[in-house]
Image 1 (cartoon, rainbow, N blue to C red):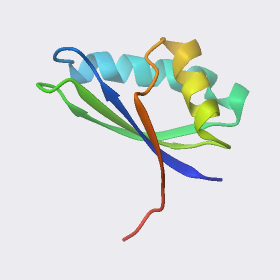
Image 2: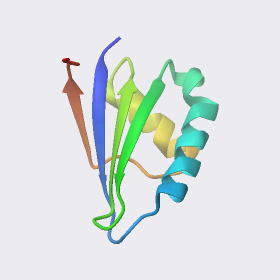
Image 3: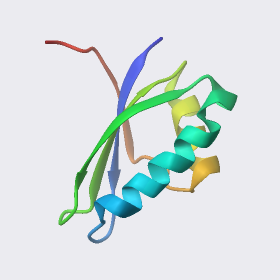
Length: 83
């Protein structure tokens, strides 16, 4: 399954608690789209969120975000994991 890193650029600060709630909403419906959100990172002050996701394609990953909470990524990058 392809691995993607998506990036959200918000207009203001964001809290880790708000992102945790959005992530939980993603987890509730991700199976409907053959998607698996794995981890996320947050830069609270800059309003940036980074999500690591396995998905058949970038659109499937964004569909989960759209349906779960409406916060669609501004960027989606196909990535490979290294050690």
